[in-house]
Image (tube, rainbow, N blue to C red):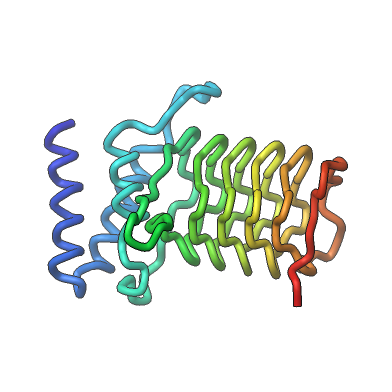
Length: 204
């Protein structure tokens, strides 16, 4: 395990010191996560292995603007109970990191993952399980959530503008103060039970 962690942190340093190598490093790290996160016991309390969690944290805290045109491929990964990956910036008084814009998480298991304040703008989450996930303050504008399961997840103040949500499940989902205009759907999403102030449309 120590060797694996050393290699992951070494790739993180390479990304920081040689930005032109970042697309290659991202490809290597996403392949590593795919390879080491597809097996598991499937239990509700299953968690990613330490090296997988560290690899995801390194990916989350990279400068996404340096990715180039490479694909951010995390399809079919099993990251149930993924721990929080953000960093509190005391100077700016806000969370930084958790940068996954346009990432492909199709058919992934992100149940009970903590993705609060993540940037998932334009991400592909088709068929993804986000049951009981924490998505408070998460940027999901333009994301593809077709057939995704967000049952019992938290989306307090999340940005859901222009999402594609055909067939998505929002049963018992907490949507207070979420920014939601008109989702791009050809049919209604699953019913959302009434809650105190479940929706608030974006102000114009």
